[in-house]
Amino acid sequence: MLVLTRKLNQSIMIGDEIEIKIIDIKQGQVKIGVVAPRNVKVHRSEVYEEIQRENILAAKAPSTNDLSNLNNIFKGNLKKK
Amino acid sequence: MKLRTTRFGEIEVADDKIINFPEGLLGFADKKRYTILSGDEDSLFKWLQCIDDGALAFITIEPDIFMEKYSLDLSDTDVAALSIETPSDVHIITLVTVPADPSKLSSNLQGPIVINHRKKLGKQVISTHPDHKLRYFLMNNDKEEEC
Image (cartoon, rainbow over all chains, first blue to last red; front, side):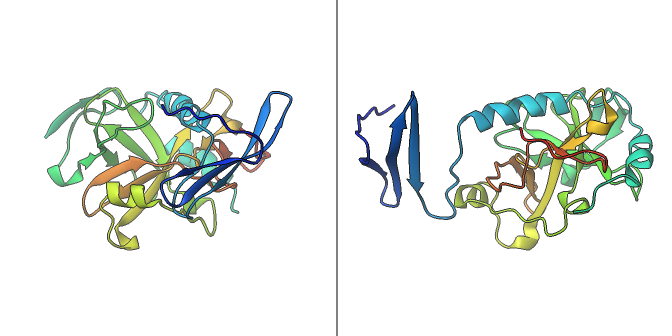
């Protein structure tokens, strides 16, 4: 891991197109601005852990091969957005 | 190939129905091969059955079944990882969580499963779209919950 120290309003470049800027620092929280091309995903790293936990929950799917129950109960009830 | 599963007993899986997930799924990185089991023709839910582990299977649903105008931005990395050449290569499904309280049935829109059905490659990607919740409740009587 590369560790750099920055002050308020200073920034870091990653490659030629990604900029990380320190926008605000207060009460133990740092507000970080990110400039990146549209097709580079930027997200909080907890997201990986959250999805991992949700996958594990999803894997506890019913031990039955019968999805018709689910379909019957939920077909009429599924939200349409 | 023959596969021993806990939910379906022994099943036959054709080679062209095997989908390879080079990175596995988050939390299941070492399981690399899956197949989709459809059940009934008109079933909205399908099983994503792991071939490397007959006890591992996920209930899935396509997001455009319950979300009009569902769309997903794929990063260059995801497109390259899946060898996607055109949008018609892409098939998207989401993992469904069936909790003890059935009214809280949810779909994981934040970590959808993207499949290149031509190349038989799959990957769980992360969506940064604000509407794509980790737990998107599928039942009518629920408010969406922030997760």
